[in-house]
Image (cartoon, rainbow, N blue to C red):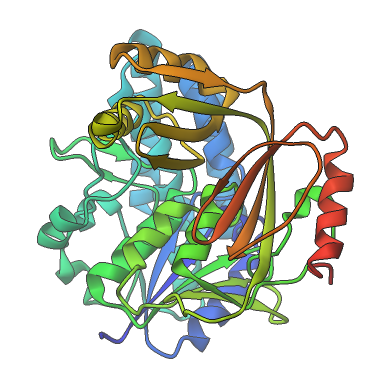
Length: 419
């Protein structure tokens, strides 16, 4: 294991200039050699996404971004690299005015948020005495898989430019990289966490710390208005189950690279030391119970009937096709002669066309809400359950309960998840 410690600072840690002071403190506290991975400043990615649809407003956007970043450190506008990124952004947006469907140019526009953040944070930290160097993910050699859902670890391991990490503290732009053709490619939203995890895996780092605006992973998402406990430890499989079930703080893609490595992933609040969550190897225990609860409205259960001997081949074909269509499968179970899955209702038409192409029979439920109980060996009776899928570390149930907040509160009390 190397001496590297990967620190990822998301947009929620880059809202106001005062956040820089806390970031400096966190880097000074690092017990190993720090590598920083950074997302775009708060709100910038959303603005760039809108700009890819309305590129004719490029001039106002470029000037606004210059002002927003200079509020963090005025001297950044004197950095040639900063102005170069803004120049390329303006050129890309002008190009989109003529070629609005050019995905390569769109990716370049979106990547500019992380590039600007890397330069801005490096400049601000250098002013405070830290020897920081901005590094673009494409320069470093990050290779994005074809569908944009993950990082190609094998290709990145071969191409990673270690010399760029050897001087000072590298501040790497997250969320994007290159594809195998050398074109800029962005990851799915939340992909900067994956960037940090992949770099930790390749460097065999001591740990990776994901700095957020919440004290670790909560048992209940704050969106439900329920004050819940921070989960102190999650095994990889539990963490994956929670991420796939809609855990906002966690993204499944950032957990996968760390499985089997022994590299801990710690989720902490930038401004609060009261609690944190560590994600690490699964520990088999006799304990049963619920660690977290997730609820996602707008889901459909599909039950697919196949000839028993064809189950494995049909499942493999179906998953490959869905991956190509970017259909998110929230939970899936399969046995001889059947395949069952939950997917968002917005993806129903795509799934049904896909199933028609491989000639299978299926039934579907009405649109309802998916309740996911995260934990091992869960047994529970809940009213109004339409369908359920049991996994090793989760029980997923489709319910037509109208009072979801009331249901979440009752379950939180039942499993003692309220702080």
